[in-house]
Length: 163
Length: 114
Image: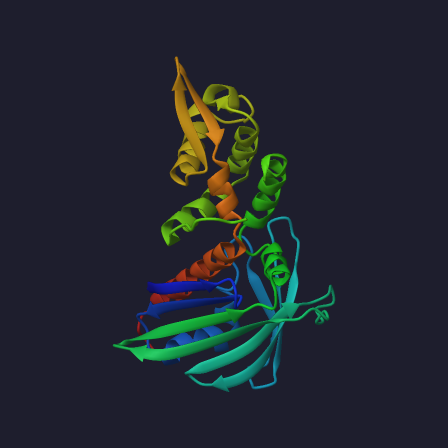
């Protein structure tokens, strides 16, 4: 795998990531289409994801939860937009309540594009956030292996000396 | 205000360093005041070399700095790096770098078989 580039645009609130894989687009597409494969990479090893619903059709929805080291289970949902196998996938990703149903918060938009690159695939992933608060909330979901917690603690320490 | 940027490698090092409870605690203590490594080690139920290993990870990530004072090695937190690490887009980027790494591992396991 080669990480080609990541581009952060703080004004447009987007993150664009380009990576290349040594597998054809049809195979890379499977890591999105097959929920059992999706579960193997969406969450880090310490925060594995479980997809309990995965309707991989335009307008279809997904439900998932992550399981943290202390047994906490933050929940989320997706709504699929365009699905053009094996080239393009659009979905919205939002927070869910304890029953797994979508909360009213604005979801984040993800756009996946797969293109053949030699014998492999170039994947471009664009995330579009609504605002900075949403980014914070997403990170607070704990998907970054305790980093958010660490940053929270550290921010608290720095406050007294911060300008 | 977040200033400066970290390279991809640096971001990965910072997040790796912060992913461990002992290292976060070391950072918390040394962000408050300079402490010697031997004094620090007394807070943890582990050997001095084990604590030194954690310190080395934090040092490589640029989160703490060491200086020698007589026989002692003194350790202090590096607030600038810590603050930059808090940049939310950086954190989200690190999350996705982790994800594509896991996708590559998954595809590698499957080989090129259909």
